[in-house]
Image (cartoon, rainbow, N blue to C red; front, side):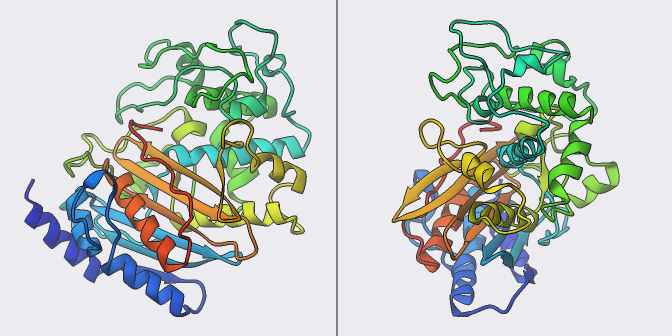
Length: 400
Protein backbone atom coordinates (compact mmCIF):
# COMPACT_ATOMS: atom_id res chain seq x y z
CA UNK A 1 0.00 0.00 0.00
CA UNK A 2 1.29 3.47 -0.94
CA UNK A 3 2.60 5.24 2.18
CA UNK A 4 2.44 8.59 0.36
CA UNK A 5 -1.29 8.10 -0.19
CA UNK A 6 -1.71 7.29 3.48
CA UNK A 7 0.30 10.31 4.55
CA UNK A 8 -1.77 12.57 2.28
CA UNK A 9 -5.02 11.07 3.53
CA UNK A 10 -4.02 11.39 7.16
CA UNK A 11 -2.93 15.02 6.61
CA UNK A 12 -6.29 15.88 5.07
CA UNK A 13 -8.00 14.09 7.97
CA UNK A 14 -6.09 16.23 10.44
CA UNK A 15 -7.19 19.37 8.65
CA UNK A 16 -10.76 18.22 9.17
CA UNK A 17 -10.24 16.99 12.73
CA UNK A 18 -13.40 16.98 14.82
CA UNK A 19 -13.31 18.36 18.35
CA UNK A 20 -15.54 18.43 21.40
CA UNK A 21 -14.94 20.50 24.52
CA UNK A 22 -16.98 20.00 27.67
CA UNK A 23 -15.13 22.74 29.55
CA UNK A 24 -12.76 25.62 28.90
CA UNK A 25 -9.31 24.36 28.02
CA UNK A 26 -6.31 25.47 30.05
CA UNK A 27 -2.70 25.76 28.94
CA UNK A 28 -1.94 22.12 29.77
CA UNK A 29 -4.88 20.95 27.65
CA UNK A 30 -3.84 23.05 24.69
CA UNK A 31 -0.24 21.81 24.99
CA UNK A 32 -1.44 18.20 25.17
CA UNK A 33 -3.60 18.55 22.06
CA UNK A 34 -0.79 20.31 20.20
CA UNK A 35 1.59 17.48 21.09
CA UNK A 36 -1.05 14.90 20.11
CA UNK A 37 -1.31 16.41 16.66
CA UNK A 38 2.30 17.38 16.01
CA UNK A 39 4.76 15.56 18.30
CA UNK A 40 3.66 11.98 18.90
CA UNK A 41 6.19 9.97 20.91
CA UNK A 42 8.14 7.13 19.26
CA UNK A 43 6.10 3.98 18.78
CA UNK A 44 6.77 0.57 20.37
CA UNK A 45 8.62 -2.19 18.53
CA UNK A 46 10.77 0.35 16.67
CA UNK A 47 8.03 1.20 14.19
CA UNK A 48 8.42 4.49 12.32
CA UNK A 49 10.43 7.56 13.20
CA UNK A 50 12.56 7.37 16.34
CA UNK A 51 11.88 11.05 16.98
CA UNK A 52 8.55 12.74 17.84
CA UNK A 53 6.48 13.01 14.67
CA UNK A 54 3.16 14.49 13.51
CA UNK A 55 0.06 12.38 14.04
CA UNK A 56 -0.50 12.26 10.28
CA UNK A 57 2.89 10.58 9.90
CA UNK A 58 2.20 8.13 12.75
CA UNK A 59 -1.13 7.15 11.19
CA UNK A 60 0.63 6.53 7.90
CA UNK A 61 3.40 4.51 9.57
CA UNK A 62 0.85 2.24 11.28
CA UNK A 63 -1.71 2.15 8.41
CA UNK A 64 -4.45 3.19 10.85
CA UNK A 65 -7.23 5.15 9.12
CA UNK A 66 -8.75 6.74 12.23
CA UNK A 67 -8.09 7.47 15.88
CA UNK A 68 -10.42 8.96 18.47
CA UNK A 69 -9.31 10.30 21.87
CA UNK A 70 -11.14 11.53 24.99
CA UNK A 71 -9.50 13.10 28.04
CA UNK A 72 -11.19 13.06 31.45
CA UNK A 73 -10.48 15.25 34.44
CA UNK A 74 -12.26 16.11 37.69
CA UNK A 75 -15.44 14.20 36.96
CA UNK A 76 -16.06 15.04 33.31
CA UNK A 77 -14.93 14.42 29.77
CA UNK A 78 -12.94 17.63 29.32
CA UNK A 79 -12.01 17.35 25.64
CA UNK A 80 -12.25 14.92 22.75
CA UNK A 81 -10.63 14.75 19.32
CA UNK A 82 -11.13 12.45 16.33
CA UNK A 83 -8.97 12.16 13.23
CA UNK A 84 -9.16 10.24 9.99
CA UNK A 85 -11.63 8.14 8.02
CA UNK A 86 -14.21 5.69 9.31
CA UNK A 87 -13.40 3.46 6.34
CA UNK A 88 -10.18 4.00 4.39
CA UNK A 89 -10.83 5.71 1.06
CA UNK A 90 -14.47 6.47 1.86
CA UNK A 91 -14.02 10.16 2.53
CA UNK A 92 -16.26 9.74 5.59
CA UNK A 93 -14.47 11.43 8.44
CA UNK A 94 -14.79 10.28 12.03
CA UNK A 95 -16.04 12.56 14.80
CA UNK A 96 -15.93 12.15 18.59
CA UNK A 97 -19.43 10.64 18.23
CA UNK A 98 -18.27 7.85 15.88
CA UNK A 99 -18.48 4.44 17.56
CA UNK A 100 -15.68 1.86 17.58
CA UNK A 101 -15.57 -1.73 18.76
CA UNK A 102 -14.17 -1.58 22.27
CA UNK A 103 -12.82 -5.16 22.18
CA UNK A 104 -11.55 -6.21 25.62
CA UNK A 105 -12.43 -2.81 27.08
CA UNK A 106 -15.86 -4.49 27.14
CA UNK A 107 -14.67 -6.53 30.13
CA UNK A 108 -14.51 -3.60 32.54
CA UNK A 109 -18.04 -2.54 31.58
CA UNK A 110 -19.35 -6.10 31.88
CA UNK A 111 -17.63 -6.51 35.26
CA UNK A 112 -19.20 -3.29 36.54
CA UNK A 113 -22.59 -4.51 35.33
CA UNK A 114 -22.12 -7.76 37.25
CA UNK A 115 -21.11 -5.80 40.34
CA UNK A 116 -24.26 -3.68 40.05
CA UNK A 117 -26.18 -6.96 40.31
CA UNK A 118 -24.07 -7.90 43.35
CA UNK A 119 -24.99 -4.59 44.99
CA UNK A 120 -28.67 -5.38 44.35
CA UNK A 121 -28.39 -8.86 45.83
CA UNK A 122 -29.03 -10.61 42.52
CA UNK A 123 -25.57 -12.21 42.41
CA UNK A 124 -22.89 -13.14 44.95
CA UNK A 125 -19.21 -12.58 44.23
CA UNK A 126 -18.09 -15.71 46.07
CA UNK A 127 -20.85 -18.23 45.38
CA UNK A 128 -20.18 -21.30 43.23
CA UNK A 129 -21.59 -20.19 39.86
CA UNK A 130 -22.75 -23.73 39.11
CA UNK A 131 -25.45 -23.23 41.73
CA UNK A 132 -27.02 -20.61 39.48
CA UNK A 133 -26.16 -21.75 35.96
CA UNK A 134 -28.76 -23.86 34.14
CA UNK A 135 -28.09 -24.05 30.38
CA UNK A 136 -24.36 -24.75 30.83
CA UNK A 137 -22.16 -25.53 33.81
CA UNK A 138 -18.46 -25.11 34.54
CA UNK A 139 -16.92 -28.56 33.93
CA UNK A 140 -15.65 -30.50 36.90
CA UNK A 141 -11.91 -30.49 37.49
CA UNK A 142 -9.18 -30.95 40.03
CA UNK A 143 -9.50 -29.40 43.45
CA UNK A 144 -12.47 -28.52 45.61
CA UNK A 145 -12.43 -24.75 45.06
CA UNK A 146 -15.44 -23.51 43.05
CA UNK A 147 -15.55 -21.15 40.11
CA UNK A 148 -17.04 -17.92 41.46
CA UNK A 149 -18.01 -14.63 39.90
CA UNK A 150 -14.99 -12.96 41.53
CA UNK A 151 -12.74 -15.55 39.91
CA UNK A 152 -14.43 -15.28 36.52
CA UNK A 153 -13.98 -11.51 36.48
CA UNK A 154 -10.36 -11.66 37.68
CA UNK A 155 -9.24 -14.43 35.28
CA UNK A 156 -8.54 -16.75 38.21
CA UNK A 157 -11.28 -19.36 37.61
CA UNK A 158 -8.84 -21.70 35.84
CA UNK A 159 -10.78 -21.65 32.55
CA UNK A 160 -9.58 -21.92 28.95
CA UNK A 161 -10.20 -19.84 25.77
CA UNK A 162 -8.23 -16.63 26.12
CA UNK A 163 -10.01 -14.72 23.34
CA UNK A 164 -12.35 -14.74 20.37
CA UNK A 165 -11.89 -13.82 16.72
CA UNK A 166 -15.54 -13.09 15.98
CA UNK A 167 -17.63 -13.96 12.92
CA UNK A 168 -18.04 -12.21 9.60
CA UNK A 169 -21.42 -10.54 9.12
CA UNK A 170 -23.80 -12.89 7.33
CA UNK A 171 -22.01 -15.98 8.60
CA UNK A 172 -23.86 -18.09 11.20
CA UNK A 173 -22.79 -17.13 14.71
CA UNK A 174 -23.19 -19.36 17.75
CA UNK A 175 -25.36 -18.78 20.76
CA UNK A 176 -23.58 -18.19 24.05
CA UNK A 177 -24.12 -21.82 25.06
CA UNK A 178 -22.81 -23.08 21.70
CA UNK A 179 -19.75 -20.88 22.16
CA UNK A 180 -19.14 -22.26 25.64
CA UNK A 181 -19.57 -25.82 24.37
CA UNK A 182 -17.46 -25.26 21.27
CA UNK A 183 -20.41 -26.59 19.25
CA UNK A 184 -21.15 -25.62 15.61
CA UNK A 185 -21.25 -22.99 14.32
CA UNK A 186 -18.69 -21.92 16.97
CA UNK A 187 -15.12 -21.93 15.67
CA UNK A 188 -13.48 -21.84 19.11
CA UNK A 189 -12.80 -24.79 21.42
CA UNK A 190 -15.06 -25.47 24.39
CA UNK A 191 -14.43 -23.67 27.64
CA UNK A 192 -12.84 -26.13 30.03
CA UNK A 193 -11.19 -26.04 33.44
CA UNK A 194 -7.41 -26.49 33.25
CA UNK A 195 -6.36 -25.31 36.73
CA UNK A 196 -7.85 -25.20 40.20
CA UNK A 197 -9.91 -21.99 40.63
CA UNK A 198 -8.00 -19.40 42.63
CA UNK A 199 -4.61 -21.02 42.04
CA UNK A 200 -3.34 -18.81 39.21
CA UNK A 201 -4.25 -16.03 36.82
CA UNK A 202 -4.83 -16.92 33.16
CA UNK A 203 -6.56 -14.47 30.83
CA UNK A 204 -9.88 -16.02 29.82
CA UNK A 205 -12.49 -14.50 27.55
CA UNK A 206 -14.20 -17.82 28.14
CA UNK A 207 -14.60 -16.92 31.81
CA UNK A 208 -16.28 -13.67 30.85
CA UNK A 209 -18.64 -15.58 28.57
CA UNK A 210 -19.60 -17.73 31.56
CA UNK A 211 -20.24 -14.51 33.51
CA UNK A 212 -22.40 -13.24 30.62
CA UNK A 213 -24.56 -16.36 30.80
CA UNK A 214 -24.74 -16.16 34.60
CA UNK A 215 -25.95 -12.54 34.49
CA UNK A 216 -28.61 -13.28 31.89
CA UNK A 217 -29.90 -16.38 33.68
CA UNK A 218 -29.93 -14.70 37.10
CA UNK A 219 -32.10 -11.85 35.79
CA UNK A 220 -34.03 -13.57 33.01
CA UNK A 221 -32.88 -10.78 30.67
CA UNK A 222 -30.91 -10.88 27.43
CA UNK A 223 -27.41 -9.55 28.11
CA UNK A 224 -27.41 -6.51 25.80
CA UNK A 225 -30.74 -5.32 27.19
CA UNK A 226 -29.64 -6.03 30.76
CA UNK A 227 -26.45 -4.01 30.34
CA UNK A 228 -28.29 -1.11 28.72
CA UNK A 229 -30.67 -0.89 31.67
CA UNK A 230 -28.28 -1.79 34.48
CA UNK A 231 -25.03 -0.10 33.48
CA UNK A 232 -24.93 1.91 30.26
CA UNK A 233 -27.78 4.32 30.98
CA UNK A 234 -26.84 4.90 34.65
CA UNK A 235 -23.25 5.63 33.57
CA UNK A 236 -24.41 8.14 30.92
CA UNK A 237 -23.21 5.98 28.01
CA UNK A 238 -25.95 7.10 25.63
CA UNK A 239 -24.14 6.13 22.40
CA UNK A 240 -22.99 2.70 23.56
CA UNK A 241 -24.45 -0.77 23.29
CA UNK A 242 -23.80 -4.51 23.25
CA UNK A 243 -26.49 -4.97 20.60
CA UNK A 244 -25.46 -5.99 17.10
CA UNK A 245 -25.48 -2.72 15.09
CA UNK A 246 -28.26 -2.33 12.55
CA UNK A 247 -27.32 -1.81 8.90
CA UNK A 248 -27.98 1.92 9.31
CA UNK A 249 -25.86 2.14 12.46
CA UNK A 250 -23.05 0.18 10.81
CA UNK A 251 -22.87 2.84 8.09
CA UNK A 252 -22.18 5.44 10.79
CA UNK A 253 -19.74 3.37 12.86
CA UNK A 254 -16.03 3.01 12.22
CA UNK A 255 -14.99 0.02 10.11
CA UNK A 256 -12.10 -2.25 11.04
CA UNK A 257 -8.87 -2.53 9.02
CA UNK A 258 -6.07 -5.06 8.80
CA UNK A 259 -2.38 -4.40 9.41
CA UNK A 260 -2.00 -3.11 5.83
CA UNK A 261 -4.83 -0.64 6.24
CA UNK A 262 -7.33 -2.57 4.09
CA UNK A 263 -10.95 -2.78 5.29
CA UNK A 264 -11.91 -6.05 6.96
CA UNK A 265 -13.84 -8.07 4.33
CA UNK A 266 -17.55 -7.97 4.99
CA UNK A 267 -17.25 -5.38 7.72
CA UNK A 268 -16.71 -5.52 11.47
CA UNK A 269 -16.90 -8.98 12.98
CA UNK A 270 -19.78 -10.09 15.18
CA UNK A 271 -18.97 -11.23 18.73
CA UNK A 272 -21.65 -13.31 20.50
CA UNK A 273 -19.25 -13.29 23.47
CA UNK A 274 -20.49 -9.83 24.34
CA UNK A 275 -19.05 -9.47 27.84
CA UNK A 276 -15.59 -10.32 26.54
CA UNK A 277 -15.55 -8.31 23.32
CA UNK A 278 -18.92 -7.03 22.10
CA UNK A 279 -19.25 -3.39 23.20
CA UNK A 280 -19.64 -0.61 20.61
CA UNK A 281 -18.87 2.80 22.10
CA UNK A 282 -17.08 6.13 21.74
CA UNK A 283 -14.08 7.32 23.76
CA UNK A 284 -16.25 10.04 25.32
CA UNK A 285 -18.91 7.55 26.39
CA UNK A 286 -16.25 5.24 27.78
CA UNK A 287 -14.72 8.22 29.54
CA UNK A 288 -18.06 8.80 31.29
CA UNK A 289 -17.95 5.20 32.46
CA UNK A 290 -14.46 5.74 33.89
CA UNK A 291 -15.67 8.87 35.67
CA UNK A 292 -18.44 6.73 37.21
CA UNK A 293 -15.78 4.28 38.45
CA UNK A 294 -13.70 7.13 39.87
CA UNK A 295 -16.77 8.47 41.68
CA UNK A 296 -17.50 4.99 43.05
CA UNK A 297 -13.93 4.61 44.30
CA UNK A 298 -14.20 7.98 46.06
CA UNK A 299 -17.53 7.00 47.67
CA UNK A 300 -19.49 9.86 46.16
CA UNK A 301 -23.23 9.88 46.79
CA UNK A 302 -25.25 8.25 44.02
CA UNK A 303 -22.18 6.64 42.45
CA UNK A 304 -22.47 3.65 40.16
CA UNK A 305 -21.11 1.14 42.70
CA UNK A 306 -21.12 0.99 46.46
CA UNK A 307 -17.72 1.92 47.96
CA UNK A 308 -16.94 -1.62 49.11
CA UNK A 309 -17.87 -3.02 45.70
CA UNK A 310 -15.72 -0.43 43.93
CA UNK A 311 -12.81 -1.39 46.19
CA UNK A 312 -13.30 -5.04 45.25
CA UNK A 313 -13.28 -4.15 41.55
CA UNK A 314 -10.22 -1.93 41.68
CA UNK A 315 -8.04 -3.99 44.02
CA UNK A 316 -5.81 -6.75 42.57
CA UNK A 317 -6.95 -10.33 43.10
CA UNK A 318 -3.84 -12.01 41.71
CA UNK A 319 -0.93 -10.29 39.99
CA UNK A 320 -2.16 -6.80 39.08
CA UNK A 321 -5.65 -7.71 37.84
CA UNK A 322 -8.78 -6.70 39.71
CA UNK A 323 -12.29 -7.32 38.38
CA UNK A 324 -12.25 -6.28 34.72
CA UNK A 325 -9.31 -3.89 35.07
CA UNK A 326 -5.56 -3.88 35.52
CA UNK A 327 -4.66 -2.11 38.77
CA UNK A 328 -1.25 -0.47 38.93
CA UNK A 329 0.48 1.75 41.51
CA UNK A 330 3.00 4.11 39.94
CA UNK A 331 4.64 7.15 41.46
CA UNK A 332 2.34 7.00 44.48
CA UNK A 333 -0.77 7.03 42.27
CA UNK A 334 -3.25 4.20 41.74
CA UNK A 335 -4.64 3.77 38.24
CA UNK A 336 -6.81 1.30 36.37
CA UNK A 337 -6.14 0.42 32.76
CA UNK A 338 -6.85 -2.07 30.00
CA UNK A 339 -6.06 -2.70 26.34
CA UNK A 340 -8.22 -4.37 23.74
CA UNK A 341 -7.99 -6.00 20.33
CA UNK A 342 -10.76 -7.19 18.02
CA UNK A 343 -10.39 -7.97 14.33
CA UNK A 344 -9.56 -4.55 12.84
CA UNK A 345 -9.84 -2.52 16.08
CA UNK A 346 -7.46 -1.73 18.93
CA UNK A 347 -8.02 0.49 21.97
CA UNK A 348 -6.79 1.31 25.46
CA UNK A 349 -7.51 3.44 28.51
CA UNK A 350 -5.91 4.58 31.74
CA UNK A 351 -7.74 6.34 34.59
CA UNK A 352 -6.29 7.59 37.88
CA UNK A 353 -8.21 7.17 41.12
CA UNK A 354 -6.72 10.12 43.03
CA UNK A 355 -8.14 13.59 43.51
CA UNK A 356 -7.43 14.91 40.00
CA UNK A 357 -9.40 12.01 38.48
CA UNK A 358 -7.56 12.24 35.17
CA UNK A 359 -7.53 9.69 32.39
CA UNK A 360 -7.57 9.07 28.66
CA UNK A 361 -9.38 6.71 26.29
CA UNK A 362 -7.93 5.98 22.82
CA UNK A 363 -9.72 3.98 20.12
CA UNK A 364 -8.51 3.09 16.63
CA UNK A 365 -9.83 1.18 13.63
CA UNK A 366 -6.68 -0.68 12.60
CA UNK A 367 -4.81 -3.84 13.55
CA UNK A 368 -1.73 -1.72 14.27
CA UNK A 369 -3.78 0.70 16.34
CA UNK A 370 -2.34 -0.56 19.61
CA UNK A 371 1.09 0.68 18.57
CA UNK A 372 -0.33 4.06 17.62
CA UNK A 373 -2.39 4.26 20.82
CA UNK A 374 0.66 3.45 22.94
CA UNK A 375 2.55 6.36 21.35
CA UNK A 376 -0.42 8.67 21.86
CA UNK A 377 -0.81 7.65 25.50
CA UNK A 378 2.86 8.34 26.15
CA UNK A 379 2.50 11.72 24.45
CA UNK A 380 -0.49 12.67 26.60
CA UNK A 381 1.18 11.27 29.72
CA UNK A 382 4.17 13.54 29.22
CA UNK A 383 1.99 16.57 28.53
CA UNK A 384 0.11 16.08 31.81
CA UNK A 385 3.09 14.94 33.87
CA UNK A 386 2.12 11.25 34.00
CA UNK A 387 5.62 9.99 33.40
CA UNK A 388 4.85 6.93 35.52
CA UNK A 389 1.46 6.25 33.92
CA UNK A 390 0.85 2.54 33.29
CA UNK A 391 0.78 1.57 29.62
CA UNK A 392 -1.14 -1.68 28.94
CA UNK A 393 0.83 -4.18 26.85
CA UNK A 394 0.18 -4.33 23.11
CA UNK A 395 -2.24 -7.24 22.61
CA UNK A 396 -0.69 -9.92 20.37
CA UNK A 397 -3.91 -11.42 18.95
CA UNK A 398 -7.58 -10.59 18.37
CA UNK A 399 -9.38 -9.91 21.64
CA UNK A 400 -6.53 -9.79 24.12
